[in-house]
Length: 384
Image 1 (tube, rainbow, N blue to C red):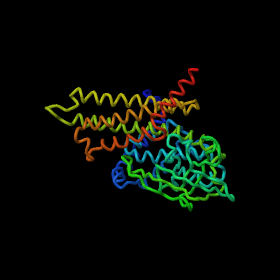
Image 2: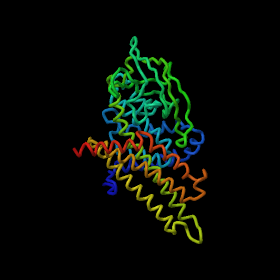
Image 3: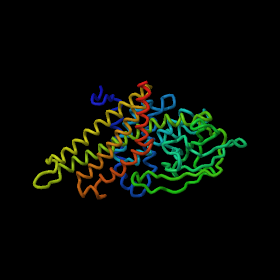
Image 4: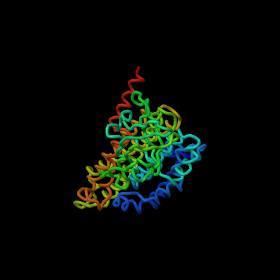
């Protein structure tokens, strides 16, 4: 049997329902407290691992579920309905685990794969630098081979789980080569001498997801720490970024769904001039637009994920889904505050947090302007 609205299978629907139950029973009670405290609890991360959520993207040959990108999207959506901060935790660990599994040596798999997939260890990605955000090929962090060790020097910023991760995947320039050709990936345990956590960022939203600088100062790791082949790091990261962009779209869908649910409930209960405000066309049409934008976001995102799972070229569709869903989420969460009126601006109600959490998804994993560049280049290429 299928969900004919979006083509979901029984397996996918069962997964979606199981994650919804987990989110509502395990995440909902602690979500606000984590936001106020400014960090997630390790118990929640471990519970995700116990449910097998980090195995969704992994092939069965690697001990995973082999369910693919569409299942990943469904999990991300349900988590972000309750906590987008926990969505960052799920997305970051899952995508880096996917990159690790694709490139790791036999010894690296033996050391880390099971512990990472079971949430015994947390992964962090050290990619972004002050001058290298969407343009990852401009990174300046260097790694030189010296006496059987890689010596790392560089400055990474906006690192999710910075200071919390047990193991970092670090993008560094290992040779003099133009642009992305000289970039490699290195595995660096958090307790390595020369790795230092810098400033903890004070953010607008996603407050339970810690973000920090990570600095490398003559940080030495064994030559065997190279993840994949030398100089191929950009290609490995690029594939995981495609998945991350689907995750961003899914996060936006989760936020939009909660914004819609809360707005509809409030509009039907709130009375002015002797009527519920939902009876007024101006308010009702805002809610209708929320529902329409949400539906279109799901169609675009599920379709893009299906192309990924089919092994087809999906960069255009993924980019479209990412900027469409995240732009819509920003509009929808802003409209939700408008439906609530003055109450929506107050922290006593949930919609102000939804708006703050929505903004970042237009920026991360390649800004929405970059996504439009990807689409534009794809259109021109196929028109020739």
